[in-house]
Image 1 (cartoon, rainbow, N blue to C red):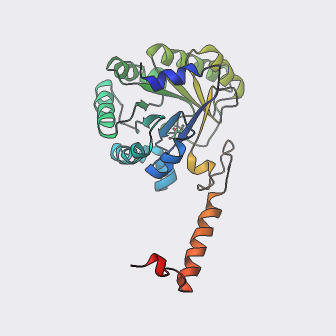
Image 2 (cartoon, rainbow, N blue to C red):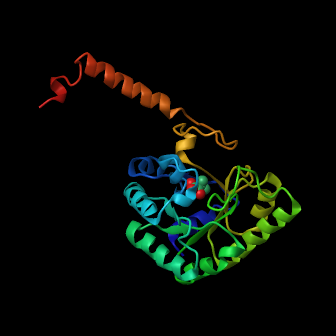
Image 3 (tube, rainbow, N blue to C red):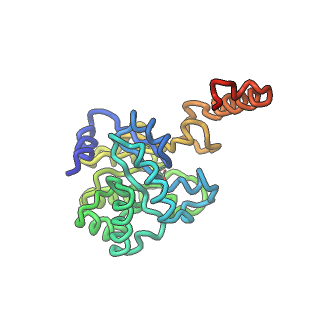
Length: 258
Ligand code: KIV
């Protein structure tokens, strides 16, 4: 087993796992100082390209952003989302996962779904490709609004059974998105592998947030998003100073000129 995956495993029931998203080198370099896992999420479709769905994200989008992220990641486990339609069958999943790994040198891929994608997950793992699962709200197939999952007993049973199926297929961790607190707690207790929550309560083994959301660069009103800083304020400060010094001819002074 990959050393970095072993380290993540060893944190279960001991210390929280930190997962951050990144779409480019400079952010990845800073995130890498804190994260156990850096995820190149297909959320880049909405965050960077204003798509109203992650379905429009292409394999090329994922690969190009991941190549940049790779340049900034030294110590964390780097996981890349497989975009919509890139794992419709087990052979397609293998072909595309191999391409992602070869071109980006990432450590693992993430796929959304449970029982419906088990064949693909098993096939990737059989071919030595580490896989991270994703259950609960699945942005690639979700229709309608952001609604929590696992509220009805039918939904709860389904997410629990999917998580066990994924674990038994060999995934090393599962992202639980917008899963009701009691369901996330039950799943986390039932699994030997770590759960990474996003809007799924403090009971998960780790947490992930989209970096642009947590630093306040992305205007989103999703309930689980906490803005830990207001990065826009700092950008504006820098841009304002630059503008003022250019206009007053203070910049570039001799020191900054050839
Ligand atoms: O696409 C993404 O960034 C994700 C995380 C939010 C879990 O899947």
